[in-house]
Image 1 (tube, rainbow, N blue to C red):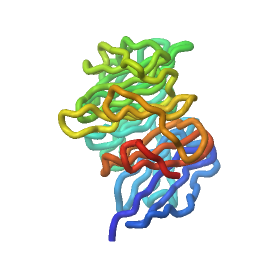
Image 2: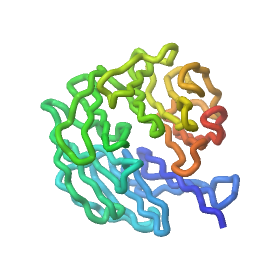
Image 3: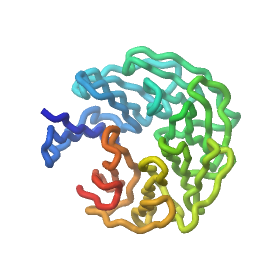
Image 4: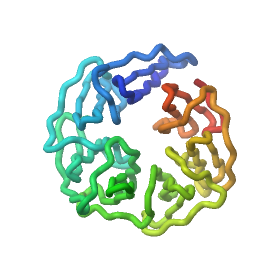
Length: 285
């Protein structure tokens, strides 16, 4: 029997769980858990059993050992700002609002704190996108009225403010290691771990979500970018075209299927989930 596909979607009214059994082409109706909480981010590992970790907008961390049926609170030394995994490293990480990093290698049962102090006057932005891979961790931080990009390592240490100006979202291509960041001017690319940046020509400006889709060796990744004007795709890391979506609404976040490189998911501010099986070229509800 083929494995099911399960999506966990964070909403203001709880964590929505959407399931597509086996080889079925139809998604089952969504069920909502933690309905009394606004969920900022979530993480799940393949089962069975399926461990799920969720973070509320108030910074509470909760754990389920059974795919979301029952939940237990997890007490850490401070409120949680962001939740993520490293992709190429075992374990799940949380960034605390005091700037510390905490990691778990057993699905959230036990946690180890990694000290990484934030620069003065900067706070980790709750629920913001994170790029974490290659031993580096990138977070968005709030400094007065600006959002800045921060970098540290999985072993801890000082957070560094990268020379990018205000940034709205960041993604990393695991194949090349390149970083892509959304700024008011457009998409910026860095192949120096974020130390230097170059504005990509003709890239859409004022974006709010971005995802790099790895390509075969020697090829540039595909990029999908959401803006208030619509969804834009670059299949070759250079040329751009606007894509049609099955439902109206600005895409607020993207997610890549961890096992099928060509499959993507997108969520809109109007409450729709969509999927693409061909690297963002077409989308279905």
